[in-house]
Image (cartoon, rainbow, N blue to C red; front, side, top):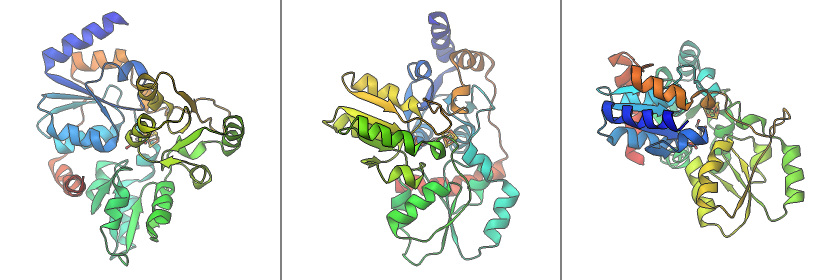
Length: 306
Ligand code: 13P
Ligand code: SF4
């Protein structure tokens, strides 16, 4: 492994590359990243980097976002199959028909969607800024929200809106076990439940804090508590454990009996694939300029908010 890390460093310099990683990546990838963040901070960083190559350890929609913001840069994803159940739920044609069947609605799309869907949206949001963006519209604005119906439901409850919701879910966050949570609450009565808003309402109603991966990490940093039950992809625990070695983190199990609810897409990336991708400058993300410009507009509108 040390050899691979050394090679990655050499190739990174040779390519003038920067490695961005989401908090759901394997810990060994997190440890070699130049910048880590949630979806919003990764998009912001991707916009300002002066590297020639962005190697994005995340999933396909994140790399597309980096490419939309940086058409002149080479953007590579170590494993091109790293998709996302939310992004995949919104097929281009069906999404177009859905929008057309709801004229006079503002389309707010969660960043976890394809460039095609972004291109058909009025504004993009992430879990960090969704509430603020929704609240920027008048109370009587007709809004459709896609593609996450669980996040959309949470935002409807938080903002008192009645947004129409696309029927997509995150395959990780929708299967957290309420039964396992109830047992953990009994076992650790002082434990704090930190949950991502992509979780179902049955989990969120017990949460002490609901927010993006970055906000969950920040919450732990500022908290005097010792035990935390984590209802999001467990990769996020790596940073929290590094920053707070004395604190205890318990990943909430899923309802399929799995103790560790990892995202199968995020976890496709590996150090070996990072090394090969930097050597070959492949697989790269490409898209037509027409699509990129259409997707850029709602993304820039979001970034102006943040
Ligand atoms: P954030 O890191 O923006 O909270 O997103 C979580 C996620 O599901 C990314 O796929
Ligand atoms: Fe998509 Fe869920 Fe995986 Fe995030 S955790 S990439 S939303 S499937």
